[in-house]
Amino acid sequence: RPDGITAAQIVNLPQDSMPKGQNECRIFSSSGALVKKLDESPFARFEWDGTNDSGKIVSSGVYFFVVTDEDGNAARGKIAVIR
Image (cartoon, rainbow, N blue to C red; front, side, top):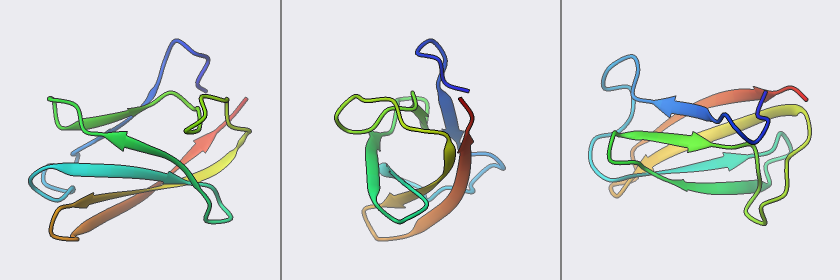
């Protein structure tokens, strides 16, 4: 339930579930459209504030994330946004 103060965190749990090295996270809508690209923090996690690349708040729904490293290894998951 992002409200501008909190953010969804994508972390490396269980341990080593994300590829090793410098990672990138992409958030997609349920239709497959790219919503936002996230950079990894120094703490090996990603934070998504529920906005798209234009800074607009996304609507309620299920969103998918894909974390990839420079070698193309990937980890996937989903996030439900409830407004």
